Image (tube, rainbow, N blue to C red):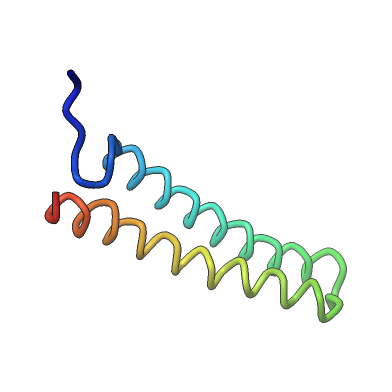
Length: 78
């Protein structure tokens, strides 16, 4: 019989690293899109500016909260 935790059989280190890297990737994608878009195209359309800005903000939120949720809170509540 396998023993599972309170939240099932979750691999917290993998989820923490994956969430952080996803957030970091979104942040880099948004920042690089803004910088390269302005460098090569000049003025970006409003929808592209909004997309890159949301990617940056979402990346910060996902990267921050995945570390706290999967790296600190859930392992402590097992």
